[in-house]
Image 1 (tube, helix red, strand yellow):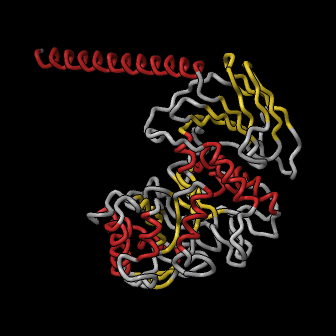
Image 2: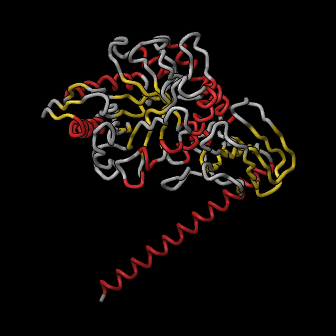
Image 3: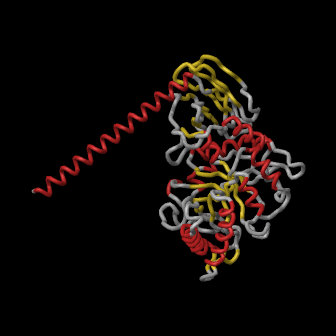
Length: 437
């Protein structure tokens, strides 16, 4: 797996979990989606707050009770604004008015609004001029962006790009990162082939065909696997790879399709009995291990507390450090071979100095360490086809390292400020001398 822009090798654990999202069909009310306590319980089990769905005003009178109930439970919405059909500035205005009613009822619950869904699969017509396909999507997207940023309740809401470009005969179109007034984030639906690991399909250069080198802010608002075309064991391992690779490659949000199976083989919970699939259990374990309950979990400055390094990581894998507010460091290492199960590869992790305790976790197995080591400065872990976590819990060693890293960062900032002040003074002096002459 190769990053196509600067890779994220250090981030807050809470921020990593926040990159994860899941698709719902509350808008359709199908299967178990009309059961709000069940939806909330499933989201809590996964440890995910980001949800994607259409906003269907049929479900409850304003302020749309299904949506507000979930918002009050902590869900952050990305609303799909259109799925085919004939659209106009008025339909966009109506959509945003409905979104604003939920936002007014639960302030801060609206993360984003999204352009038309899969224009290669759902015919979109721009009613203003009768255009279809890419021209219609671009006109719609520009109007959605303009109206969203002008709306008093939604002006800070993120706008995601439409999907379905560069597919099914639809041209790739412009790069939204270089075209003002379209979107804050590029977007696509990179579904991996059945029974194959996800890396090649989720690479930025492959998924984001409308931007050179796959660069720029981006989201993936649908991805996942369908049973039985992909086995439950494969889905469990590869779902975790999808999410760590997304965060590593700076994908702002990755939304798995979907929360609950409706009989089509997609879903993290079964239709009958609402049982968590192996993929749901793996994700629950992963996020349980990484959860940070600290009050400043999303605001503390993430510093590289451990001067760790790795050796023997396959070209298909990588590593990243996820830091908690109490200085606990979780080093995630993973590989993504073409075969499944993947061959065992021993990866060395040098921890920089002797650590009091080191825990090794395999989220496919559970939330308890599979191994605990004492007073070691390095470990060797077996990695196959999914992420393994090397955890260094908070201790006197990490506290001292954190203090040292903080002091170094503070000194660097002070030096940069001093240099900038000196440069400004020199420039002002030169300007004054030039003016005097």
